Amino acid sequence: MFKVAVVLWIIGGATLAGMLMVAVLAVPSLSEQAMTWIPMAVAAGFVLAMPVSFLVARKIARPSVR
Image: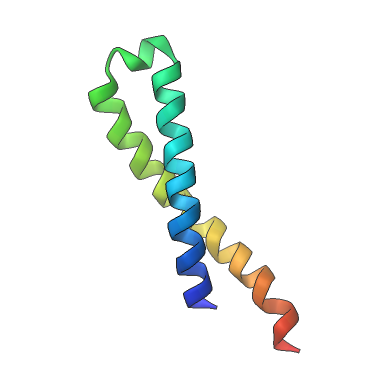
């Protein structure tokens, strides 16, 4: 299950980080300070993807445990 979670985290983290980066660039007040907000948004995306990937990996692994 851990290997599946890591693969999901890599994919989900990159996706969520990209979504948050686009959100920073789309908001005019945040895009003025993009050099500050983009690294924080990308880091938050990767951190938030960790628990989600473990939950999804658990759902994927559950039917195969029987």
